[in-house]
Image (tube, rainbow, N blue to C red; front, side, top):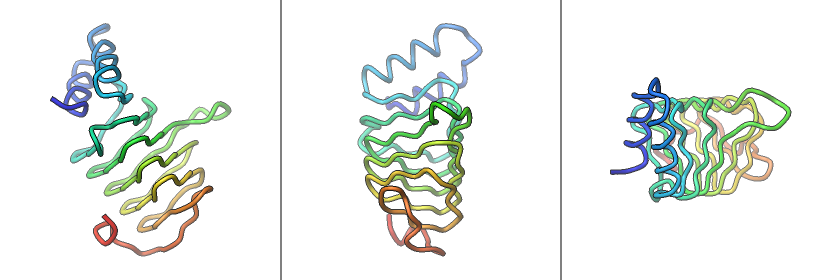
Length: 144
């Protein structure tokens, strides 16, 4: 059993009032990551190192075949309601932060410890604090 399977099960039964929340707490306690029961995950979603230290806001939308490494935070800010949306085939490196009402395009690679607070177009390599587009027109498979 892994946190992704537990989260998908809790999403499936999210209409039942108590059980999905208990599963979310179980994931938090057993795997040290926060994957809320109403989080919509795409197909082929992967958590590096079992999701150790990962925190994802419950309104975040994550596309297909995304890979998120350990200690990543994806969430909103205190002054804005909306949260990030990740496209398909996105890789987020260890310790990266994706904050605010932004959209991350398809085939994007976000480097380790980057802080992304602006929209990122398709096929981009993002590095640094704040996250800057270093290269465009990339393929995820060339970097991961």
